[in-house]
Length: 535
Image (cartoon, rainbow, N blue to C red):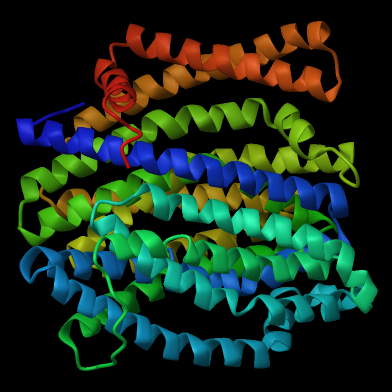
């Protein structure tokens, strides 16, 4: 990877190690997330109940992206890092306490309003649900149950920001695994209990979401105590740090609201397609979110405190090097993942979901959506790395512009393709808009930073893409050769997929070596060798 100085080398390795810790934790979370989706697929298939649940959960989830992993997280980490760097740890902790109380008041009001107007929101998001008896009422009931999840996950995001800034990455990242664990165990337990109270079993899964959210928050509390944080509630809306967070959040929230508008639009059109379309898209996106979380989110979480510190010190040279290194690492991991998901979509979905109520027809439709989603995987992860750089530089207007450009483009593409492609049009549009958004932001950032090593990025993408195409074709060949050997059973398909993925990764690494992308290989070796398990 391109290096400008020895301290850049150290920074790159530190980010890689931190990202490795996050990736390990995120991997556990995403695996449990897939188990949760398997449970849904097995118990409910794809249709009435899952469609209703997905829309119900999507409503508080839209706000979650604004108040948790989105605007709040980026704004808080930026200001908290600056306080910790310039004013000391105790002042930073005082800021965090002030934010927690302010957040509790604001979110309390939002939750009350959300529950009160849930019927209106559902009517806007999925009006066609009213055409199917009971679907609208079920969606509203589950929305009201899951709305308080917003409060729990937002507090968990603040705690995560504190721990990340102080160098703790593993526990905050694996906390989401406890969310999935709580939602699985609690949801499945209540699945069997709900009918005794005259409620459909899917209601148990809705309550399980709250159980999971509580676990995600509580599991981080011991680590928070170890770094010396004490909750001393106080509220001062005039506090400079709190106002800086709010100022950063407002434009960031506006920018992210464009993303939520896209999700809203996508849900609206999906609900108007064949019954099951919402479910197929949801299952496909969950599979795509595995590499996004493992690579894009992990690298972003690890790089943000470093980038924020460089921005606070006005060290543009190291900021540019850190950004370039993070992007190359993301490309190296997400581009082959895109080809892997596209080429192996059917066997992956068949193995994971095709059980119980989930049919071979559902597999085919979900695989179609996954293949189209995979096109934009690299851009989705890269945007998660690029947008926080703008936040660290206190410039949020361009992410806003890019987001609203994406809304307009998304609407245009769907309108032009929905009649022919149906639910696939939504996945395709999501990928195209994300690619355009990333290219726009990367270009603006290049101008804003007065250049970064674009030549190395282009060269790396060319080599990585070439290796990924060959790897994808090779994986299809291996999968075809292994099918007669292992057969069509679950265990046979599992062994087939494991062997295929193993040889595909091996082929990819060999190609990277042949293409002389030694820096990326060295980075992974360093990540594995230099104590990736030191959390």
